[in-house]
Image (cartoon, rainbow over all chains, first blue to last red; front, top):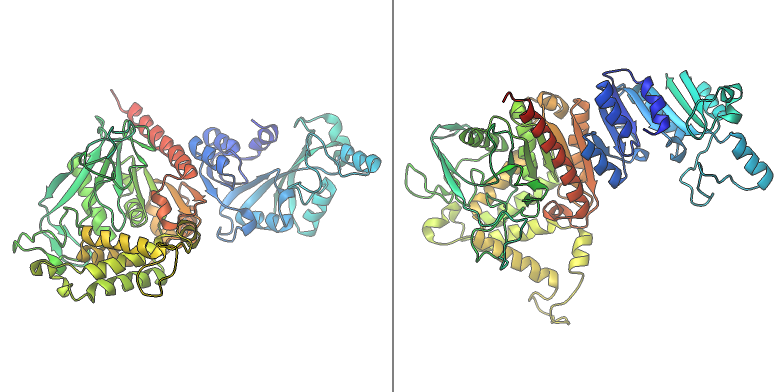
Length: 196
Length: 389
């Protein structure tokens, strides 16, 4: 299992109703369904991913979440998950508001643009960072809204969003004790569990 | 038919007529004391009768879903692309039932069949049939084969509406429900198209108020116009543009009213062919069944509440350029199912062919279909393995 998903799965309690936004090939939902008896759906727009979800028995709904989630009623889900996709949204703040409206709690993961490597790249090379983990150049990247941990937490304060749990990992999705000394500098991926 | 039967064809098939003598109470209040259904089946029913799939047909469909009736047939059944050995609905694994619905004109009890009481064709006296009535008659067909629960009920367009109604009326009698290019009810625009089609037929001087059988005539022009109108709504603007454009048959304009554009001759050809194959009274009945379809009407509750009793898993599919039953209509079904906490998957297939796309073997459509049918098969197998030996 993709390592960030491996960390998230422990934050979903058994038997819960889950919505996974941009669910990819359905790996997380498949695990949550078979190991934790979770129900729910994935939303996805990639044709191959959708077919793969269907083949796995994961309930997947073809839907572009940029078009909004208005058709879903308040508090329909126990947990709404979005992994590594918040930075590609047109309006991440609106998506987070919507996730918190339709779900009792949310799990969000995103790459930390405040990581020392990204800072160093821009500071010393004077160019937007390109790395194995962030392989795109500025003109073709789907990542239109990068943020740092600090930025994200500031948004949470502004919107009265309560951070239940957070963890940071490196690019191999490993916890390292030293990351927690200075997460915004040393953590590459942020994983937040939030509620209103 | 091709000189050699393709390996993935069900081959030469034989329809069968099945009689039902238990009176059928219809939604309109009338009762059919006895009736018969024309049916075709493909594949083998397994010992515990758990591998059966019901195919529900659309407005002009019938029981001849796959294969050929004879070596002289030019075309196979109407959904041959999806049904056969190794195809999405694999007849090596499933027992597939296709039927001509009540009120149809291909051998089942309907306006062009004799009324047992008079010996004369029913004509316009055949009762108005609803989707509910079809589901009831199909449930009795399942009883006839000893099928307690279908592995899946599958249909496109009006057929998808029957599949949806099945999940509500008989929650325990299907494990999967596949609703393709359908809607939870018709829009005013859709009813309007149907009304124009009905007017074209009933105003044809050869319609004789539906009693044209005795006159040895058929309202050919009316049926032709109805079908031409239907065809326009089944195709998309883009699809028509790429298929016909403004191509001229003879290369130049002749300044008269003969058909000159390719699209004109295509529509005339389709309309004329249809007018010799289909029954006008059946066309009226089928369009009324479409107009009346609304699973929320009886209980007066929102669709999500009506679907609360469903137990099947759902696969809903729509096509991007289908404007007769647009993706929005399918999304309404999906939203209601999510609201009702039902298991549902939904795919919106990019296709230029409009409503017709549901009958066309579009690669992504087949991928989704295949993937979902694997799930249907897995559920059927797990059920069989649970049975005590």
